[in-house]
Length: 143
Image 1: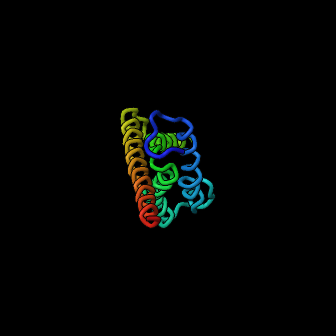
Image 2: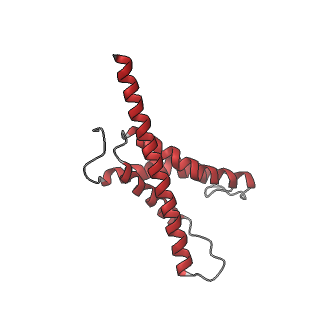
Image 3: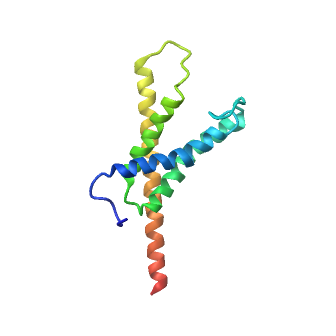
């Protein structure tokens, strides 16, 4: 892997990021009591943990990917995060108890997509920054 931003968009990193998001971000949410893979009811604690990990986990997992890609795959992992959101809408379709309003649903999906992309960008930037600071610190210690 080369350091710094890549010169062109690399789809390989979109798929790798999506896989990492599924394992490290979505799987813990699904395994909570009341989650997708659980047969129990959703409790207030589980609901709170899902919300916290939904936001905090997106930042942390994005930062982890940003760190290991040396901050060079910011756009790719944001696209991977948006793909994760669409994957969730496919796996768990929204429960619509009212008549479907296309414009309302599209606004909701676009809003979530923007939030996920922004969180992934912030996390990727943060992870790349931590990597660069660590490298500078390591070089300073070698001198």
